[in-house]
Length: 338
Image 1 (cartoon, rainbow, N blue to C red):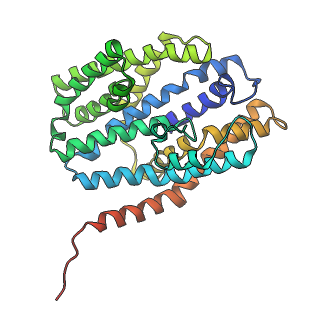
Image 2: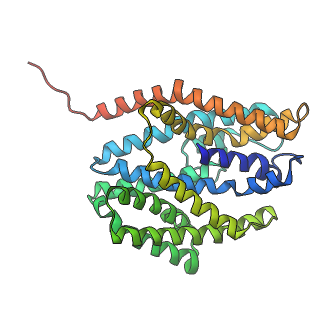
Image 3: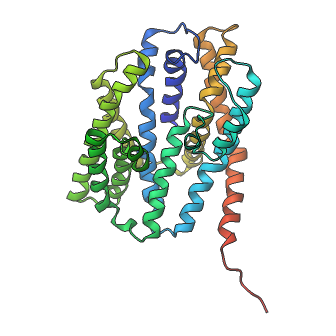
């Protein structure tokens, strides 16, 4: 949830205005300065994804893994992408446009391949998540996931070569070479949590070093895109702190009384991440006639948090359970009775 909130703050208090998708906002400069680093929350998502997928893929049948990832990603994506498309179509905000062709392309998620832009800017990271799932599925199907710790150094080394020497965008997208370090960090952290080894520790530092390298290198893109400076020291500090906090969190002994709350907050993160950006820009813009920029952002952010919690509790959990039950049962042999 913290990672999603940091990304939302980045969009509302920095990127929206910097990218011209929000009008000029009268916000404290300190808030804008802090908010500009919120994009690093996406990297935290990738670490968490590597950790969770590494855990859930162990001893998993290929079809079971495929179903679990499909159910987690697609139903919520389709619903909230459709909600975003409808909001854009009905809002009349001149900054955002949607047509049927773009909507249909986004139903397939990989809309850029079809020459259509994403309905919402955050979808690029969802595409990378799906590509990551695809590679993990392939390893499971080939019976090679048990060798994942041997595969990671090859992936990281190849990623480094592409990012530094080759510079192929196709290789970057197919092999996630810009963010492979973060996914690898999550995988290694899961393995180290189960069993400490010198190899695992060495791999942790390798993945961490490459993650830091790509995070620092990527700052140049943000500086060019938004005409502001990003402190390399701050970026490094955020990366180190994020990994340290994640280590601390996964080793906490949470009282069983708080598990439902923790699951609710974690479960609602995906909906919050998907729904907040473009609908948020439209909502904040509409509220600026009546409220200050800070108040408008606070109102919209609170509304999204409440919406995401209710959506996860009342819709996502129930719908995903039904779909998963159906898909898993579809290929389960039926017991014949005499």
